[in-house]
Length: 242
Image (tube, rainbow, N blue to C red; front, side):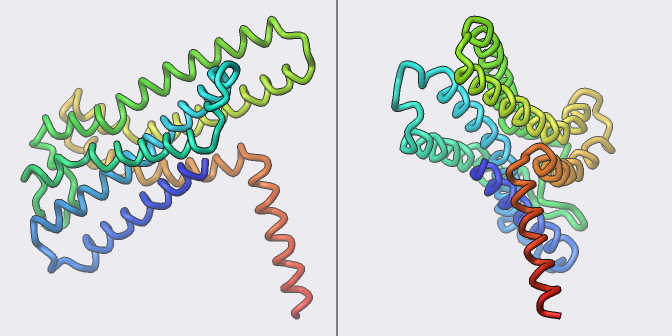
């Protein structure tokens, strides 16, 4: 969860920088600089999506593999998993700087133009479809495996753990679905070729990140309790000071 939060923060920072260049630094017209802004933009998107894939693998290790192999729950194992995720995230967007598909266009973000359909298609498949399909397969397997164990286990302690695993599973799936909704306009564009869907897709990505963070607070009871406690203490300190 911390890894996903860091990836989301990175995405928000990169998007802010891209919009600052778009609105406040119009004299920066170099194609190379634009390609690197595009690289970091796509890298940040992939970082968030693949962090959910890392979460899915982590849940698989904790819920399924840990019963036979102790290394599946070790901190070192998950650190390696996160390192592999970030290495993948750094490699996937390389076509943005290795090709000349991205170039400076006035009043436009440094994304792949819609006329490069092959590159746009690669972006959707590499950044969304592949991790989404893997996440779907992993969670479906975990869900049915936990349900099977739940039906065949009578111990109250183990049942409580399985229920907790299912709750975490539901929450992660909800958050991932919210985030992937942002890719729907781009997918529809590839199918229909309607230009406005491509423009909507650029904005929807940022919007769904904000929605996903709000829903995170609603679903995570511990995090919500900590934030409420923090604000209560802050209010008490303000009242004491006045």
